[in-house]
Amino acid sequence: MVDGLRTRKKERTRRAISEVAIAMFLEHGFDRVSVAEIAAAAEVSKPTLFRYFPSKEDLVLDRIADHRGEAAAVVRARPAGRTPLDALHDAFMAGLDAREPTTGLCDHPAVMAYHRLVFGTPSLASRVAEYAAAETEALAEAMSEAANSASRPMPRLTSRLVAAQYVAVRQILARDNYAALASGRTAGEVYGEAVAAAGIAFDLLRQGARAHGL
Image 1 (cartoon, rainbow, N blue to C red):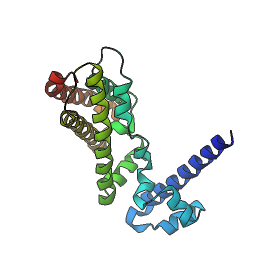
Image 2: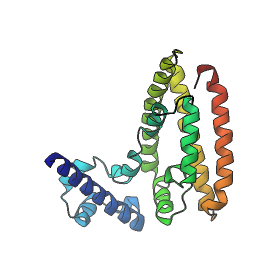
Image 3: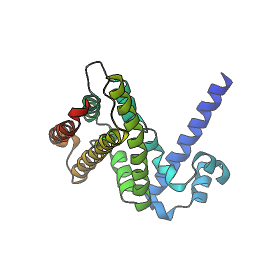
Image 4: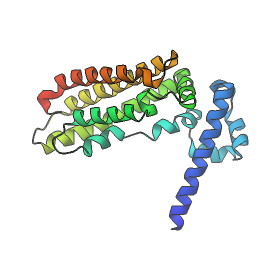
């Protein structure tokens, strides 16, 4: 019980610091706000801040880090009869329907501002690429497990290539959706195009992965 309360308190502190930092970055710009200023605004010491966030970039990308391993989890939890790519397609479509920020099809002002911050700051965009690489490795492992469970073992290289293609496709779809919203259109207006684009993208993925049961 005590450990649970302590964990929840730490998570609240972590969230609070991140929210303060993001608000300051959005108002003043990422490069114009120091860690010391964030710590003061969040009413924590710099050592405390760094215990939660090893770098300045981590203050922003905490939201993205929350989604690490999701693709692998989708593959492992897929219903019987659905291939890994089927399950990933289903999950992406559900995300579009729910206007999840990770699909790029969320026109809430706060989400749009966050995306502008991330993709408009080189050091943050670079870190996003690092997250994508980690996501690729986690997904490749899940796909290898899926192939083995279907008695169709595959080389590690194959699973990594398919996983990398999925991660790239998801990034492109999300960025295109965001770009459409950034041009002034609403999520409702873009939805049909986003669904069609996802269909095309996953069809292309399936063509290359079908021989491996993915």
